Amino acid sequence: MVYLLNKGIEQLQEVLDKNKGAGLDLKDFSRFGVIKKVCQQQEFLLDNPPSKLKDRIVSLHKPYLRPIVRGKENKPVEFGAKAHILQVDGLAFIDKLDFNAFNECTRLKLSVAKHKRFFGPARQLGADRIYATNKNRVFCTQQKIFTCFPKKGPKQLSKAEKVLSSEISRQRATVMEGVFGTNKNHYGLGKIKVKGEKREKLMIFFGIMSANAVLIAKRRAAKESPPLQQSA
Image (cartoon, rainbow, N blue to C red):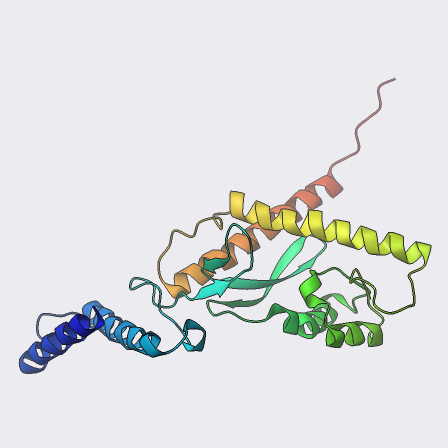
């Protein structure tokens, strides 16, 4: 199949060279370039494992998509933008948004720095276990940030620390995951319907910011509304 595809590409290229590209618009030229690259990648995969192929194209219509290994039982591999979210008091902020895979645990220091810039120093931090690396543990200790990371070493948490760690874990599992669910179910992020790398990123951005705006509006309305009068 790869041989036949290469042969077809060569024949089409000869026709284009003779006619100086007549008959093809810019979109067609772009698609032809993607097909060439896919063919090159398939040739590479004939002699090399998939893990050595960088920037693998999985869609002719969306060549910017990359397979992202998630490690989930129902979805071991996902396709789409990967977002690293910093969440403060139920409000979500995009720290990094990319269609390429990246290691989110390396973003912890940057997230803490952004929190300090906009909200002041962080004192408590909830995150998934993937963030509990030795470097992140040392950093949080130096910054006097209490986390919900599993304890390492012989020293045990006090009763109060156990309660706080449990509460941080609960908040992370309910509030943070709840925000993700709300964004997907009510703000169009469960299935991105627009096409194009920039349009998809804009859709994600406006979906998250719209959810934040609604949450802020509800809180202001609750704060400004007069208390209910008790019946005599």
